[in-house]
Image (tube, rainbow over all chains, first blue to last red; front, side, top):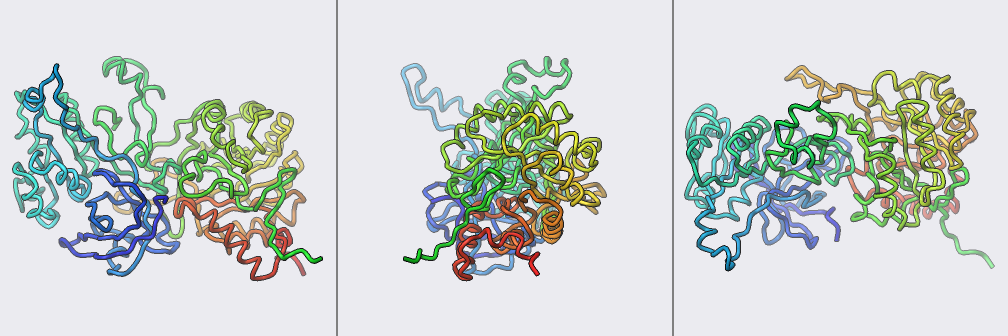
Length: 290
Length: 309
């Protein structure tokens, strides 16, 4: 069965001032969705809005999936009007999820104890509605990850009780200080990973572009591997329209090192557009040309 | 003995025989594999691939897409892998299907057009060429290929000399008199015409006061442009003798039939592929159902039907 299906809405509940959780019963396409993948949702069978909207997988359920969304435009306003029993067209799961490093199996050369000792707890960062994308990753790494969650105000922080049950190391911040620390997730990052930190973690992040760019800058400067989930206007979700591109360093450019590339005239060979829907949406911070 | 009534969807575009009139519009169907999960590519009348140039093109910076009322603006900028890579890496996949492959191509100069066209001749698995002289996402100077009759004549004639394949010229709607441009293309050696390409458009974000597309202008497609496209097919049908491929906002079988009645011998489905990846096959099935209901045996009998009387 292909990934373009009709799904039945089993719930569409408010989880905050402008936020809702959509539960869908989906036919089995034989594909198990992974954290970081996304779905294209046709909010209404009409010519306006015309295109499907991309939404991150929030949770895989027994009957299908859940999507967490912010009501902010024409499409999501229409989506908010749906009730249980309604059906809609759904395409997915799409894209590649977050690469999760499995614990390395014990071998003669690398005993399990050594591997564990060197594995710092991954840091998962959510900015605003970016929580929707990293939530299944936090669930997957239950109790093993440090979670940083930033939003504009208290009203934009969602599912805090659930999140507190999923991580022992939880840091919250808001732009206006209405909940948690006043500031942004970069401030939190600098606090939990001071410059003399020896055991560097992997970072996973999803949020608004300025936040991701700042996380990327932090990670690259500290030589930390960070996986960022990007977003761009998208028409098809299956790699055909070439709408949702991001410039990614080519392999040759990466092999050359940063300084060599800077010294050279910027040419098409240093970087090329890749499709967020196909090669992404998750990219390594060091590969992204901002 | 009487033959059982069955609907025949076959049409011809010059020497090219299609099992049905439903093709894909260039730039909306990738190079084919993108849609193989959703439909049987054998069912299509023809596959028109993403526009190709001699050298790979990087395309425009994002945002490249913005949705508008019943349509979308795009400024992809003709990003493509180049003719050589297409023939080597993409064509072998398409050759596994019985569906004819039409290659859309473009150049940045007269010489590039001619050189590009010559690269496809004799390549097994390519059945026709569609020449793009009308992309709105190129620099101002480029648009003369599709909007200045003298330049159109020159570039189509140059390409005609370089290829024995059926030559389809894709017309720009961004002209004062599309019938005139159609006649020029016909007189210069085109075997068929595709119309319409996207309409030049623009959208502005009122919060940032900046254009929504990085490239400022884009091409408008989708249901919003269908009445414009129908009118242009209708006008061009009266002006030329060569077959027309109608496109512009086709979302369903009814839209496709409307284009055929306006004068299109075949149709191409574009933006609708983004909305519903299996729409092409649904359109073919819908056409068959329409013919059965109306006891229409030959879909060819509908071409230009709106001109009768």
